[in-house]
Image (tube, rainbow, N blue to C red; front, side):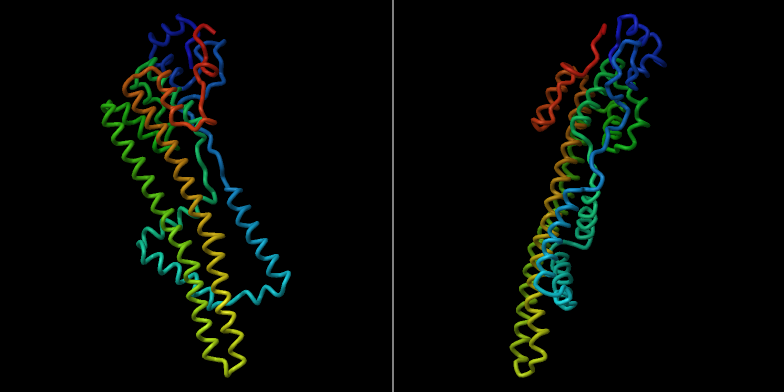
Amino acid sequence: MAVSSDTGGARAKANPGTGTRAAVQGEPAAAGAPTGATAPGRSVRLRGGLDVATLVGLAAAAGVILIAITTGGSARAFLDPPSLLIVLGGTLAVTTASFSLGDVAVAWKNAAAVLVHQTLDPKGVARQVLLLAEAARRAGPETLRNVLPELRAEPFLHRSVTLITEGLPPDAIERMLTGEVEATAGGHGKSAGVLRRASEVAPAMGLIGTLVGLVQMLGSLSDPSAIGPAMALALLTTFYGAVLGNVVLSPLAAKVERAAEEDALVKTLYTIGAVSIARQENPRRLEMLLNAVLPPGKRIQYFDREAPRVGA
């Protein structure tokens, strides 16, 4: 990223079609320049894929419950369609009544997404922002147009850089990007709220099913053959409600909240970088601003340890 000599810097200025593009794309200006830095136009590597923690946790919980069931008897005794109907149908109905069909649909979509959640590494995002800031400081913000095609995989960053290259005032860029971050966080927060509400409703529906089963049992004491099914309905609905609420819905709600926090952090880093680049601030100051947002374990020392040095 850095120019290795004054001659190289003059050559970059004299030929904006070659030297400037090389600087923006992160190519070394001289053979001796370090090549370890990430090109600013290159997408940051995604972390994640299948959420192993969620899948392993849910599988382990299901396994423990299944072992307890099969050790003491038959698993078929724990299958009761009316109980499932009361818990699943009742939970979905009450949750939908608390929100809207659209909110519930989006919540389930986000819940499924966390199982294959992918997120950008905050440290990699911070380095990418600093590389963009260095390129813009050296050749001007308008030169970032060269990397726009390479940023389409990261829509928020693409929009941020587009706003910079269009020459919008820094305050306007900050308002637009901050508003988008808040709107996205609000949507994820609502999805987490839907799942939290469902996790509260499920045990309650199990209790309602228990009461229904007890009433049926007490009304059928004269018929011994009806006591068993009524007792099964009474007990299994409580079981289903507890498992659904505490083993499935509550962990998914927590995962959606965590994914929302990670997404908000990445977008906040991009917002800080976009505003700093638009204001043409020193990248070293930008590094301090980014570290103020990053968690302690994710902070970077780019200019002290990673950035190529002039004359190296």
